[in-house]
Image (tube, rainbow, N blue to C red; front, side, top):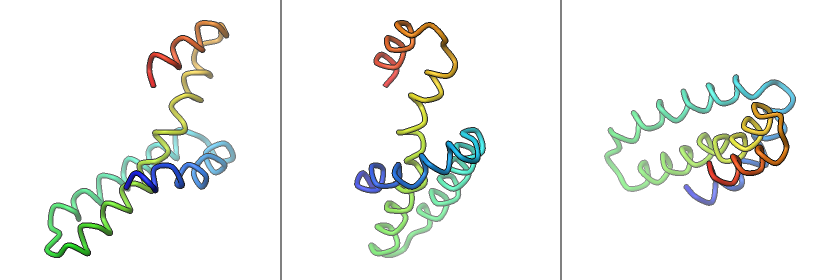
Amino acid sequence: MFLLFGWGCLFWQPIALTYGRRGILLFSLLGTVAINCWSANAKTNGTWIATRLLIGFFGSPVESLGEVIIADTVAFPPMTMLITVLCT
């Protein structure tokens, strides 16, 4: 899961910057919720591992887009740095 949190950022970051951050975050949230529902019904170890990997992939936009959204929200550069460091 944590491996795909990192590698998924390489996939989601360019898509989010091209098509919009809000849509990617909502799609990521819906995907993570759906996979968690599937994970609750996992009967075998292989199914559980597959759901963990997919959750890592679909959950990775939160890792990479949080700092970008904070930087866009706050316009004062020193305050942006402080909020970004404190919130991540």
